Length: 162
Image (cartoon, rainbow, N blue to C red; front, side, top):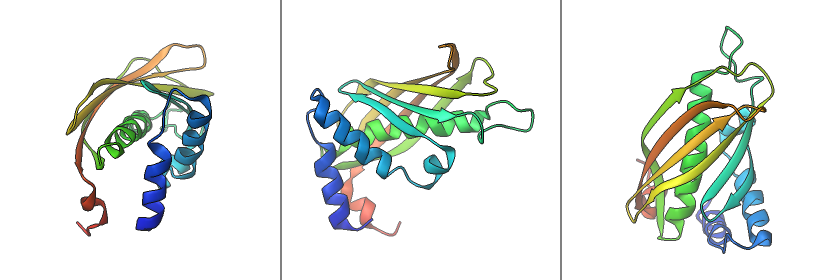
């Protein structure tokens, strides 16, 4: 992504998230800029609001050899949700989000269908954010609960080669 594209993306994400038209526009931008791994995993964002971000991920294609949703897939899903929420929060402050801690508890197996992740803020500060992510199966049963902490750093870091 060029710096011009990045600037345009920032402008499209710093909108009033209580406005349904703005919510739809932001979802379109997020889904168009998922990145390689979330795209391969089939992650799609479906809902956004001031204190909530929701996405789905298919179990098929994200299973381990026993046919269960891979725990690592759940972690990638949780990190994608939390990092996206942190990025939106950080862009309003001219900062980018980088993950510094994730933990996940796997409560039950998912074998098929789609899982839904709901991300809510636990803390949104000027330099650190923490989010809770609840991942549920199609019956609404909790599959995994995760917590992600991101550090918000100066956006000039994003253009450096570090």
